[in-house]
Image 1 (spheres, rainbow, N blue to C red):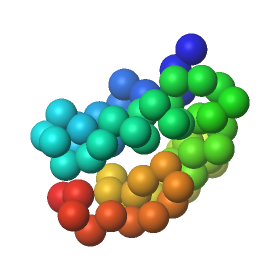
Image 2 (cartoon, rainbow, N blue to C red):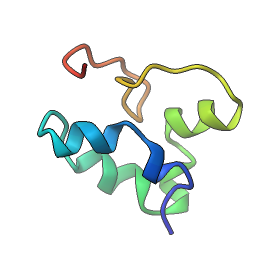
Image 3 (tube, one colour):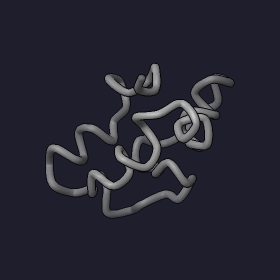
Length: 65
């Protein structure tokens, strides 16, 4: 089962554009034990703002715009 935010996550757009590796999807998005460690998921669940260019480990990637 994938993260419940998977289809809405802006990281999918960056992957399709070739700006972001699918490693994030493979490491964080596909299994519950991993996506609960995703900083984006944690913030979304608490309704805390986070920028679209924040990776699952919480780093703001300025290349992603």
